[in-house]
Amino acid sequence: MRLEVIHTGNFMLDGGAMFGTVPKSIWNKLNPADERNMCNWAMRCLLIEDGNRLILIDNGIGDKQSEKFFGYYYLNGPHSLRDSLHKAGVDFKDITDVVLTHLHFDHCGGSVAYNTAKEQYELCFPNANYWVHPDHWEHALDSNPREKASFLSENIEPIKELGHLRFLGPDLQITENIDAIVAQGHTESMICPRINYNGKTLVFMADLIPSTGHVRPNYVMGYDIRPLDTMRERGAFLEQAIKNDYTLFFEHDLNVECGTIAQTERGYGLNETFSLKEFI
Image (cartoon, rainbow, N blue to C red; front, side, top):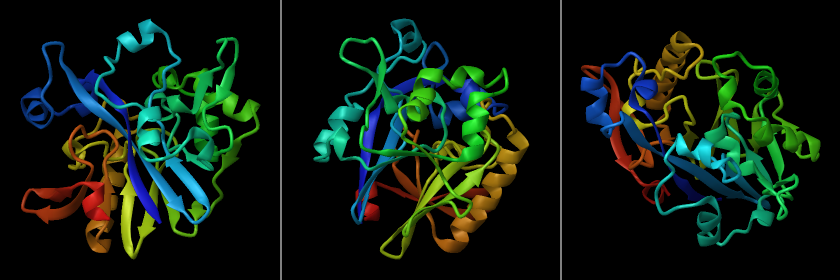
């Protein structure tokens, strides 16, 4: 099995929205804000080669939205989905499976692009099956007013229209070595892929624990539709992470790729942080 980080670039979000009811005097030490109260976040994806399958987990924000849309998110950094894949020696056509943790635009925007003439949409990964939890798919198509702005039809509907949509089964198995954990707090039926790598377990945290600053169960994002569920789910997961020696892969942490968890006098906390290469 091969694992590679795929950096798709950084974007900025309001710090208060990212930390919910946690006071700025606390969260600003974890991820310092600029004068606009904006914090910088990664959109870090994961490439997995498992047997004859080449799997990409999430794919960032994409590049097809309007200048006005991108003006809200201050895209920055030296990385892009295309450049990172090419650096890994991979072409878009090589990907066999795209696993989408959920369909918020910063996780799935790279799934779909305009064609050359910008007249219609095409899949960025034309030979891939796109895997989504079935309950999340239904939720994304008919969401609540509060969350609706995060689900963009142009990121979602072409996947089905072009015949590449696949649903995870009840066993949540992706390959023999990859399954998924379901979480309901951030959005309906988000998945966190769990990878067995040479007897070690790596969990792609998506937005259950988006960064090292969100390890504490009560550091819940304002974006979560069920914050109390997030707290329960995160606490239960962290207990399992310690018990089973999981390594966490952080999708949105600007600086830290991976880490392990420990129980401290103040509750759950980071034990060690390291790169994916060090995990391998």
